Length: 148
Image 1 (cartoon, helix red, strand yellow):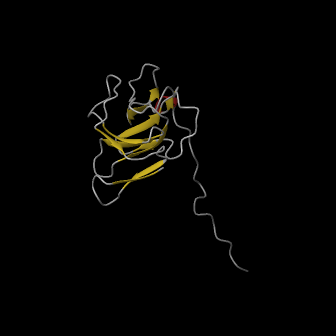
Image 2: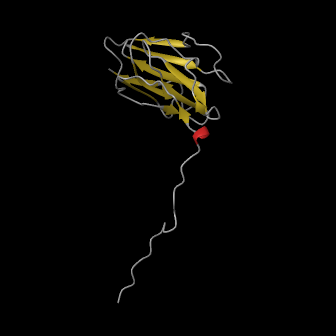
Image 3: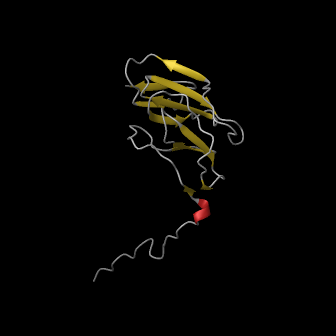
């Protein structure tokens, strides 16, 4: 008689996280986003924000809990946000793609953002229609691919 193999994770169980370790009261946009719905690296979490244009907020990983309605936001795009991704080489650099046919590069401050801003580090133009997807090159610094 052949012995039945035992389950490898027999005693594994999950535990719910504490409420204070969650992001709560997020005002996310109602329209669909083509690319990343949320973006994170080892330091930041980017969350699209409800409102006109492609607004988003950036939180540090240790800033968990309720998100205030008055949280500082980035608001540079005039169209809806379609995709976003952090640079693989620079921890504080974020690229966003939007329905306004532009890509924008944002530089995050060392700490938390203290006031809303619309000043991107760079605006990349060249698409005639909205930019749906974009991605950083994994081996070449400051190289982006985008598609409309």
